[in-house]
Length: 259
Image 1 (cartoon, rainbow, N blue to C red):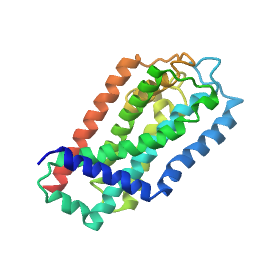
Image 2 (image 1 turned 90 degrees about the vertical axis):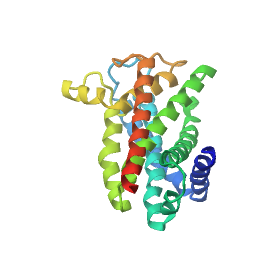
Image 3 (image 1 turned 180 degrees about the vertical axis):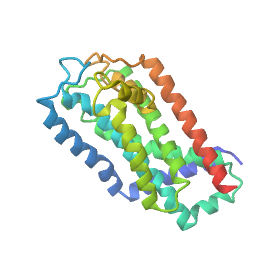
């Protein structure tokens, strides 16, 4: 059996289900957009993020974090389907097939990542309205970093979802883990100027490096970004390692839950 067929089938199923539930698109974009407009506008007059260019206000600083929040919300909505699929018996049907477990995880992860990119790109369309300029290189690298972030977050969501028996428990755990990861990634406030203990927490947070790489790619043709974090290449390397580890973790979780 070709491994491409089961992977593409599971991926396509996630995409089709998304377009049949259009409320997911509104839910994943509307709330972060409201956060960005209200919080960004409210703090822009009184808060200049430390370590940033004088030309960059808070609403510009906050924008990359909001795009990442859209990717995070998509990971939550995409992986919660695992809980529903188990309850409806769909997962049991896949698990008794000769398809390798890693193919199932890869198909689900690609499906969630595709949906995250669709919604992230929709939010990226408004970037020129706040003065962000794209070149071909910056656009390609920005989309590439978005893919890595979405893939890693989706796999992290799958690691949790495959262990959950109810959607209520899933939401509780996701809010306990993913929202703090986002808050401590430099999305809401920069690492410069925070207490030492909080700075170390932010530096060991893998999403910090994904957001840093995304921010540098996004503003590479607009505003030079000063950061205490490592160079873009090292941030990409750490984000890629995070993707690999979360994929392996999700695959191991599937094996442990089905054997």
